[in-house]
Image (tube, rainbow, N blue to C red; front, side):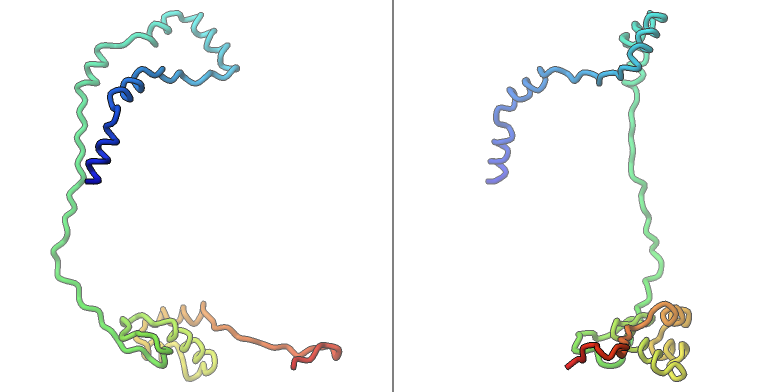
Length: 171
């Protein structure tokens, strides 16, 4: 029902609209810059045959243009029917996940809570929580753990004692 209404609206007064569009004046070329007008006029006066070449249609070129046919097709993409991918290995999450619904984590990856936990453990007990132990415990690669410990740190809040006796005491 909706398609027939849309078609009726689209085709309403179609011939008149097409005729009006065809009879419109064709766009004129953009105006020339004043500095080039004198150069163009000078060239036209020195070579009057150029004006004829510009206006004249070349039948030979037009016939060649009519013979041009472009046929393009997208290349066929062949999918490799290789062996099916191996199923991922999963592990259970470590520690308390604060009631988040995480059943299993792919090996080689950690959750945000685990990342914060291992960073904090390494910061507090660097002798116990070494990069090797963290990699073994969380099934990670050694280079990833080294990068994690090198470039990521947890927040640390430091409260400096007031240096001035007149400072407002917190209640």
